[in-house]
Amino acid sequence: MSDYLVKVSGIVKKYGGHEVLKKVSFDLKPGEVHCIVGENGAGKSTLIKIISGAVHPDSGEIFIMGRKVRNLNPRLAIELGISTVYQDTEVVDTLSVAENIFLGSEVPSPIPIVVNRRYQNEQAKAILKSLGISIDPDIPVGELPLVYKQVVQIAKALFRQSKIIIFDEPTASLGLEETKALMEIIRSLKKRGMGIIYISHYLKEIFEIGDRVTVLKDGEYMGTYKVSEVDTEFLVRKMVGREVHLFYKRERVPIGEKLFEVKGLSKKELVENVSFEVRKGEIFGIGGLAGSGRTELVSLIFGILKPDAGEIYIEGRRYVPKTPIHAIRNGICMVPEDRKRMAMFLGRDIVENSVVIINELLKVAFLRKKEEMNMTRRLINELDIVTSGFSQLIEHLSGGNQQKVVMGRWLLDENAKVFIFDEPTKGVDVGARERIYQVMIELAKQGKAIIMVSSDMPELLSMSDRIGVMRKGKMVEILDNKDLSEEKLLRSFIGV
Ligand SMILES: Nc1ncnc2c1ncn2[C@@H]1O[C@H](COP(=O)(O)OP(=O)(O)OP(=O)(O)O)[C@@H](O)[C@H]1O
Ligand SMILES: [Mg+2]
Image (cartoon, rainbow, N blue to C red):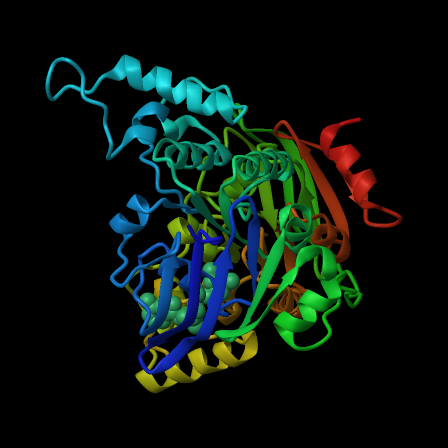
């Protein structure tokens, strides 16, 4: 038996001649959490896809539990004990918790063909209980909050008796409490002697649960370190290759007259009587715990949800939300939290996802191919988008770079006045985060009104002029961002 659950060495992966992994090594021991960090596009997801058999390397060796594996594929990886918990979750919403856990390995019942539902439910319950979770295995997964969808995937891995669980940015869409719960589960998996591979842009999490950390930079292996022997500064320098301000010190922008106003906005059971205003040049932060109604509030403004009551004004003119396209034509744009489902045109390239889509939405003059290319080039330079070329499909960009494209398209919309960013730096690396903040400041300087929903406390505190706190669908407080601390803010979120 080998000491390692997984060991890979000399891994090379090319896409269209571009080497995205350059002789990378990585190993995982039982009972440890081995983290992978690096900037957007560094190759983290590609590396774990190779370990889970979803992507074939061009060269390099893979050993799983001491056995050399030549033609790894997803099925074989699962058989060998490797499970991946995906963030864009792999669960089937319409099936129950138990059905999802057993999907692909249904337990036969005495009556052939029919699966043994009762047995499955009992088993599912036992597995969930061992994770300290009590949810009814009979309810459809679609009705559960996101963290439970991940829990279901973890339960599935336990049922398959996996030895290795891979997490690729599991907390990017989770709130504070949910993140805490997931950390607790990961600790319990460690205790069972499982090996965990953990990718996150939140370095705080690495220090909380990581045992070792491997740094990738532009596909290059920068080294593996014991977490207890490094600090944040060290990791950031390895990842980015320069100093990064961990707490962004923003430039102040003069605040002008009222541009945007919401009065008594309500939607049954989701949002109740919310009022606030945003001035020209102002960044209005919206904070609160997960499920407090933040995303629902901005979805009402952008015309995704229909309000039951309330009024909205843009530059003093009444605006009644109808559809997102109508919102865009009225000068409101939004980068939604769930960008993959709501903001990306899959199967289309970067040009189509930025310049072309804006032109279609706004019905502006027809652009020639060359102009489209020039505008896209400007965007790529301005936002530092890592891409192999203009024709790269958006789903083939790394997560953080997808975010930059979705955000960047609105910079081309000259008609936009109100910018809504729902979790603007979710999945964005520490270096690129600064770039996105600069873009927001630039928009503020141009006199735009900016609404930023964020779960990231340092981000809320460093970027917002004022912060509206949501609790149970209500905006309970609007805080001037002076002498605020994380602790004060959290108290307001919880209501103590
Ligand atoms: N199917 C593909 N076709 C072409 N290029 C790809 C494909 N998959 C990934 N790439 C490229 O490989 C590089 C590494 O991407 P990867 O997704 O591994 O980055 P990452 O470190 O996970 O980044 P992020 O933090 O943004 O998620 C990127 O430049 C990406 O554009
Ligand atoms: Mg990734």
